Length: 282
Ligand code: AMP
Image (cartoon, rainbow, N blue to C red):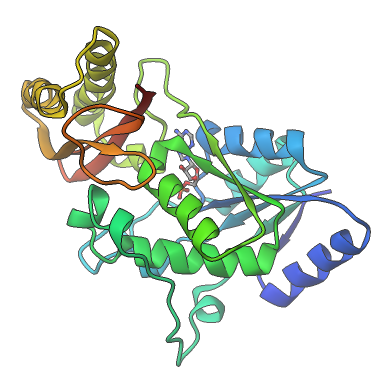
């Protein structure tokens, strides 16, 4: 039976009981407004663990003042239904006042991998992500935690954080789930009007094009990314934030495709910023 708790002590109590009984815990941190992308993580967690915990928390710390914190979509009722249908055992829906009480002043920060890609246009974002994921790990005490490749830089950063800080948690990356026409599923797709929704296809089309270039032997990162940028520019409603190739583990820019490479793009469609990527081992 699915339970939803808002207080950290309630979550702790339930999870401590499970731990005493020897159950393993799979954890899926989210910001809610759940869709099939989130549910693919839940399904994987369901397969690999005795209990599945989902957190729903729109984390104020990872939004800059000019970003969409207040208008970020929320629908706890629909989220609860989806979680129930997919066999989630516990939703943790903490309140910002308990997560960040007066006097809060401890952070988890990272250098290197947080500086490129999304870190450039969202300079405080990953500090907020690392801090909240740490807090949520301490609350949920999972054996395994599930993150989507949709946010590939985040996945890489969380893997690094867990390794660097000796956290006893296995991080499992899950593939990008897409709409039928190719657009990566995202809570932010809700912001798009009809015309923008059509224009947003330029992201997945560009990813497909990039992938094909690599499959056909392209190894020069600049040539690849220039071609992808040029393709994005064919869409009048699109404005490029970045199109880059980096090493997936270090998120350092590369000249030549070698090892495990993340090719990532961020594009504004109107005022909505969307991301997409592919990972390739060369
Ligand atoms: P969010 O609620 O956007 O913070 O996402 C929560 C988790 O779901 C993150 O690990 C995301 O990478 C993952 N996720 C979101 N959209 C997708 C998608 N389309 N496919 C796979 N994973 C996703």
